[in-house]
Image (cartoon, rainbow, N blue to C red):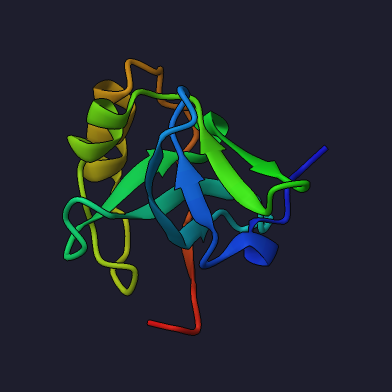
Length: 118
């Protein structure tokens, strides 16, 4: 089942220990409109939007929030990018490496989806 992350824009984002880390402000999709990366604006540093692989994110319907299966400090140290900026291949690889994940072999063109509040 694919999550429609657009329904959760501007929702709170929590880490794997259920600690509030920030707000889900944007996401990047592939050409099939499947989310590939999530942008989390940190509470501790509101000028940064950390980028997290979408595979680590889950939408919680009951609490209307996003759960990230990573530690708060790992999310906070993730590469950051503005919600109006394109992700390039090099940054994608850095993000996967940061979270100790293997990057997919195929390259997809990514599209930005962001909160209307930005």
